[in-house]
Length: 138
Image (cartoon, rainbow, N blue to C red; front, side):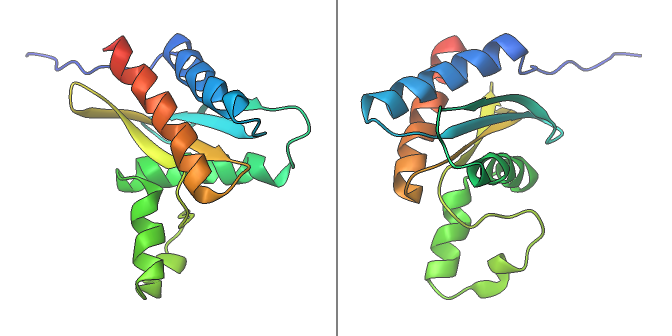
């Protein structure tokens, strides 16, 4: 029997991704929460800027969970709602707001990143910085 192997998102990877996201947030003086989940949607790493509203903790985790559960950026759900497809409001564990992105290594989804604390487009900008850090690791 041949066992298959797959890439895994490590805690070290998660911290590097979060650090890159944090650099983008700090550069813009934005206070945010950064959540990284593994491929099962389990929280791997959480980072909260000083004085960030505590509601952003659950929101960042939910954005990351939605990105891994549906294997697409949460902006997809935001765009769907804005175009009138309200079913996205009823989907379990979906935050239809930009800021959640799946993390891929060699084309395989290994986790997701969720950002919350500022406008959804700004959350998305921060998430893109974290995603870029992952791409530099692989």
